[in-house]
Image (cartoon, rainbow, N blue to C red):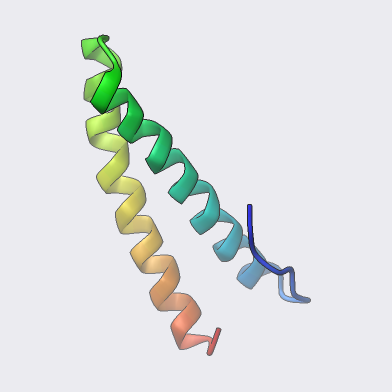
Length: 67
């Protein structure tokens, strides 16, 4: 995960989760593109947009913190 730690645990948490969800989204997209398991495909179909929404909220919060 590529982010710089600060003295603020909330900032670090938000940044860490954004990085983690971006990586998970890229991996999940591979499942959609190349996977053949319908159950996992259905799970990924739920996960990608949910994590995207969470990252939007985290980025908005970071913006309000001036970060």
